[in-house]
Image 1 (cartoon, rainbow, N blue to C red):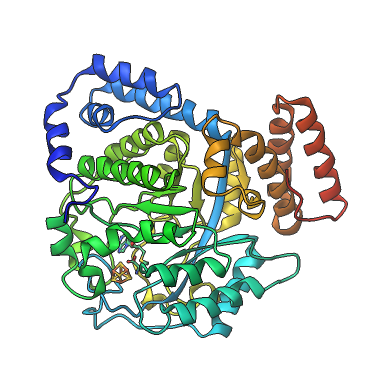
Image 2: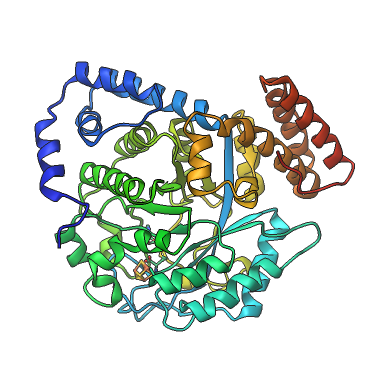
Length: 459
Ligand code: SAM
Ligand code: SF4
């Protein structure tokens, strides 16, 4: 079947777009208008590696990010519910043939215990993840698991937005998933290059390239407005994957009037007893990885970019400036990991083991406002409504004040003295910078109400 991934077109575009700093400079200038880029324009940027073009690209990505989202950064934590899996993705520690991995499937009480632990650290957003487990990955169980996580309230903590990254469902299954009250449904194609996909996914339901490729279409057909796409960098040529991600975004926009809410950029990491993961067939250098993030920022300016703890703190800090808008922190990739057990059951190796509090402090030192905001989703500003705000850069008017309000809550409820001092400076600085007088006054008033004990205030 012909799909929206036109392999020969992508390959031809990459072959045609020779290194041309002049053309690249023109594309970068166009990108600063925040209207996104075509496949051909993106191919020109992908083929440029000279120092001057890269410096221009990185500078433009930073401008676009701050123009649209302001200097705020949203936090979340993954919650792994099962590492049983029917598939055998050659790169994943959870693959069915990995007989050495300790298998764990959480009960509803264990899911509640994990959620409680995350709430105690101050998280408000979680990403529920699991292997393609016929038991704990089934929609029957997911419905109960999501309700269990949402039901946990420890102290002043609560989960205000739960996103999901599990195997793709049928339209009927997605309808049930939507009714649980999830935020974003995430699914990574891993590689859009079909021949490589076939090698990497030799058995199980995931072996069906097209079923996975159209997972987001089914989710949107079922009424899930916010979907998150991604590719696992290292499996195939990163330039191909970036153009394919863009093709995916364009096709969703064409079919449903709205593109993906987020793009994730996982990079292949070593995994327990999984030789391929430690030897990526197409390794992506740190510099190329920065290029990927910056180009995506310009190509789909209104789409959030998510980075996980797979990367080192130093690289993560650099990537924030280039366009990343959401990061995980204090993560564990083994089911039951937050309760402090079962390290032998993890999915892959992480390179940022800092706690949420440590990351918050580091981010604040860099002048960013950490955000635990979930306002858009709770006010129904999702899908096309969100994009209508994001596209003209208006979302910043909501994102920044809401990040300050949720950061304030975090500092009061979970911060130590050092974080509170650092954080207060960041809050005051950003508050002064809110250009709209009315909005500034409203934010200041809500900050006071939070200090007096109110919670969950947003603009
Ligand atoms: N099992 C479901 C699936 O594969 O779609 C959802 C959860 S899976 C645990 C989440 C993601 O982990 C995968 O989509 C893949 O991109 C990523 N992943 C798997 N192995 C990895 C590795 N060795 N390094 C980095 N990311 C990896
Ligand atoms: Fe299973 Fe997902 Fe890992 Fe593949 S990536 S083995 S589907 S958990």
